[in-house]
Length: 126
Image (cartoon, rainbow, N blue to C red):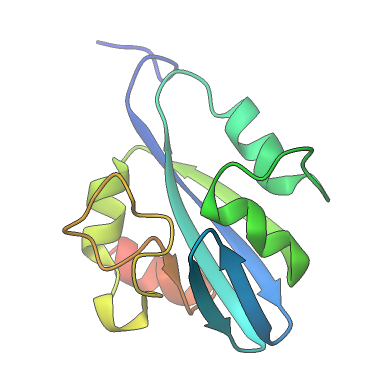
């Protein structure tokens, strides 16, 4: 049996956001005040990936989620033994911000969902 460190894992980070516009490259998304959930993956070690999400600022904005820090504060994170694709597949697509954070997966609606962790868990554990 593989150890948990070598299994593919997905994670979710819950953010509390103010209303505003998030811009990344040529794209922009309207953020309403409230809770948002970002879905990502961390293959070998989740420490570095989650540290980036939970840090108040990053030196260089590399990913869509880095631009959230202008309006949003991370409040919780959870690593799960499900892949990023499995997590996204369990969440309602109508709650996803179109194409936010899903550049690697053009068939995904997005990886940022307008919902909090408690609501997301009701979908993820169903």
